[in-house]
Length: 554
Image (cartoon, rainbow, N blue to C red; front, top):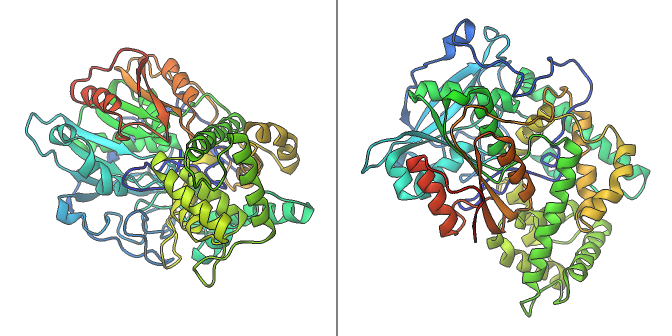
């Protein structure tokens, strides 16, 4: 789970406010609770059957339509229009980034029931994109990709990265396919705040000093939740991972594939594992990279993730200390952490100026900028530069730009719906980590022990879903996918967002899980520069033969 979407990183998601909220719910009416294990699979008879075997009308992808909150970023964001009732978005759901048509991508729209329990009561539209297999070699079918989030645009990931930069052998044999999940980007979207209100939300103080600060924080959570309920309509209660997994099976059917072949990163591993649980006989070659652990409750998820970011920061600090210009000093990671905390504290008292006349850098945005760099070791030089400018020159411009990229803000102040979708999915999938501020305060020592640098802010961030307007429909549960063919689970030992032990746990839960370990830094492993990882994953995709259990790469 993470989220800075670039050609080399996989949006997966975990923003300080919404993404850390891998919990969900508040009060209000809700459908009966379900998990992937207990929920019924889509039936081949009855109203759902009307959605199966759809004929997709492929056409050249067109440039993205502008969001009602301003133009979307060309490289990542998506139209952020509110659904008309519970049905299709107002903007064209089959749009794609500018330039997609010139490179051979096709787009289409798939319809799915809004509510699988009541399939006759409306539908959602899902944006689908494809690039046909290039050859040579026999076509193996479709390969669906998902970058995670939840909330990351799979269509953008396909057109900007996977469809052009996956190994040639893979692109030769597979049609490369992506669908924005329900609630996300060009599919029927979840919509919450407009650009100016999102800007204020990204500045929310997550380290409250007194009761007034706590009241402001709680008010921010409540206002965000109310805006989502008001602007999103019925779709807000129907964007769970189980719903999206069923949508994937409708897409498999529409593509004419007997089995679903899939590469999912970060949150996309939970989506892929849920599909295998619901439809084990239809699971093909599934790669789950940067795995999540569905058996954990929201409190444990947040604690583990907090510790994961601390592990990544300490690795960054050790690397930084090898450079003579390290802005955090050349001492031990503990000393670097103390200096970082001091910097955050000064930001809390007085934000830093930036090159933008009407914007400064708040503590929340500064923290987000640092966290964003933990996802990818390639971002560490930029983080050193950003911290140097901030600590030495009193200039927060680079950290602010990193925070903006994390939240997918464009130069005109418009945001994608990444964080809105992220909160909506997470708050449905698990009950909340905390019931109120008192529970957060009781847990603060554990969070601050897990990460002296980030613990306090990540603990308070996890309160978000306590005020969500739709009750959670999911529970922690183990996924076994009994009867599925071998499923390749990939874990990175110093992954900040999906700690390595989650990959070990998921591979053990799955009856046919095979663990591939990458001993390294950053979030996810496939396509990150390890020839060993890339060779094993590509071989599995082309032949169906996974590596030996517990193979390790560096």
